[in-house]
Image 1 (cartoon, each protein chain N blue to C red):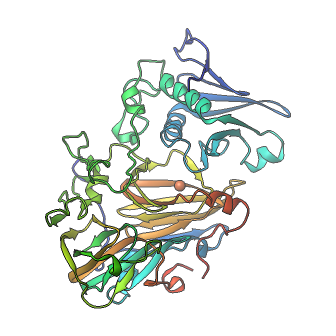
Image 2 (tube, rainbow over the protein chains, first blue to last red):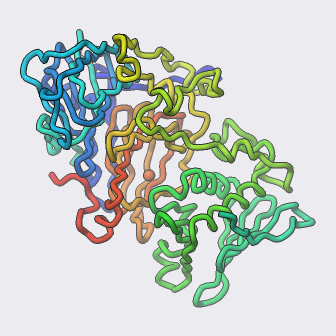
Image 3 (cartoon, protein in one colour):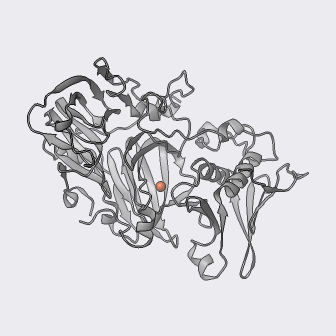
Length: 165
Length: 330
Ligand SMILES: [Fe+2]
């Protein structure tokens, strides 16, 4: 049985599913597709595709260098398409997000800090974005990242544009 | 906690034991499982194919009764009250309920867990794996009792505290630790991310291949926790054939289809009336509202990211109407 083909999506090749309504409203499902969302987004717009109270999943079009971000709690980045480097800096306490703040904040310019290292992520790879570090995404070609995050000042909502109606 | 399970001795004819919990009686024969209870109008009997029953029972046990409601089918199931568990027949079936034929009883979790585990252990024959897709296991679920399969039914769900692969956390799956790549995911890239950690930052600079991890899952329809962002849990799973239960949640749950496709039947949680079919393909994201039950059909083994909110107040917030069953207003 070597004849299975696993289908993943990509920016250039995805097929969106659909809802067949029997007795319901399609809006109840907030149905979107991360590749479609990223294909229509500007680089590093953090577009919410899932929200459960303050918990978020953001679809991000990674292209070029992102701003530097930092966050008081762990977050995670999963690459759905392409190749993304994530670089980490150990920054001083004054430059970190306030201890109890939820969600990431963008840092203006190049932060000062000790190099922690970097990871290179390809499709299916997920990285820890550890609490209190500064991190930056770098992508040579358009790529797609899903970020496990909490609602923050960088989150963008465009449900009526992205969801099935 | 040591809990007495009410069971008969093994049947001389079939070799299977029968069980009792509260007012419910459970028995099986070569093909079927029989559930009996007493309604206001007299004795009721419900029956299921034994393979479907064992697959459903396996999930209910492995998940520790999961988030709220596990329907074995349109009649029988459990509600997790987190500390106690309700077992019901007909209570969420419009006709049974309207006719007064339903029964719901509440048990301390260790008592129902011990009973369910005993049923599962006695009724699962050697050679049948209730966690596996039908193409991966045998038809040993049928016939008279022959042996058991304790190794299969005692698998522990993998629950990461922070993230897979961190020191002291759930290990990355490999051939060596007993997780070969599944036949249906033989084409999935097995590379790990490049990790370049400076000295002293090993363990903080970290990543792993989630898709490879899922390609090595040895079970179907059994979410494991892989990354934890406060109360937000990534619970991805590999799916093939039919979700053996209909899940009725007490909160909103989100699905992100990572590979291939799953077809979802969505029904009203209280009545079982059909509401929608949701067809999800790779990259699709959808919410499962808090007032529905859902059952998935995966034509090929697929990767599904189940995303949960473990806020300890959220079930109550939905139950009291403090927050709506639908997550997004637009
Ligand atoms: Fe579910």
